[in-house]
Length: 447
Image (cartoon, rainbow, N blue to C red; front, side):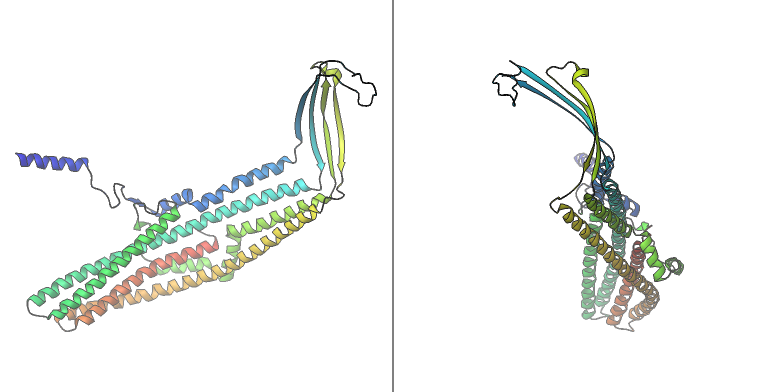
């Protein structure tokens, strides 16, 4: 009876206290590639910083547009004199007004700039070009993060496949060790075969440890790009990526790229960072024109209503309206305009050089990405042939080893060659995915 009670209590406690996952009580979250992309688009810090720059740039456009509108102001003041009001030009010691005197002043006016050397027009265009430049740069930042995430996602899936191959090889080595021990216990083989198999199994275990570390490192990298905690209890679906590449896929993508010159034209046309650099030049050129406008005179129109009285009465009699036309001609402004012009020229030159550097980088990146794609295509072809040969070689060596017709070292050699070829094949497939996406990113044609 007591035993039944203990069993029931044990089962009930299992229901109350569920088993912990690998990292405490947090369940493992499995992400697909699409989910990773969406999370990175919302949480990646580079994207957030890039988008944060758009708000001040938008406010700058509003401020620049406001210079086309008249400025309005209302001023009022109240003055109280206890000793009266005196005439400063009179020699009489007596005040004009005896006793307590109050003064009320109210001014309401508007000022509109008719002409200021086209400063308003240039400044407004500068603000718009600057905003568009930052916006295009934000789009490029999103594309760059998308590429980084895809590359890290491919590394995760590739490392998972490599770890799986290493574990399968270790399981095979354990079975071989059990078989060798049985043959040794039966007196068929000598003990050195057991030692050789144990040493080989130890090497396979070390390969697993290295593969596990590579996988964990790739987990940390992709979680960082996503903007999540690098230590999050996460996993990533292998079904988001294909497991092989067909010759048709390779040829279709090659035809889509075209020649280097055609691809280069697409890069300059589609890359948001290149468009952003061009807009930055235009913005700095408008800033230079705005700085030069200070040499021109300024024409402004003012108008308003003013009131002044000792009491808040008789607004019609004491109030008056006015309108005036002003002209301001800069004669000497302490060389400030010249300094502003030189600063603006420097910014134009800087942006031009940055665009030239970017153009060179795009050319180099395109050349590099196409070379990587070519190497990845060759690796696919070579590993495809090598894998078939390595599998046949291992099957033959395994059969002869079972028959006792070959040494254990030949068997180990054939097995290691097969495992190496399998891993090379896995690496070649996923390296092709990365090389293909690198070309698309360089062309500005990310999916």
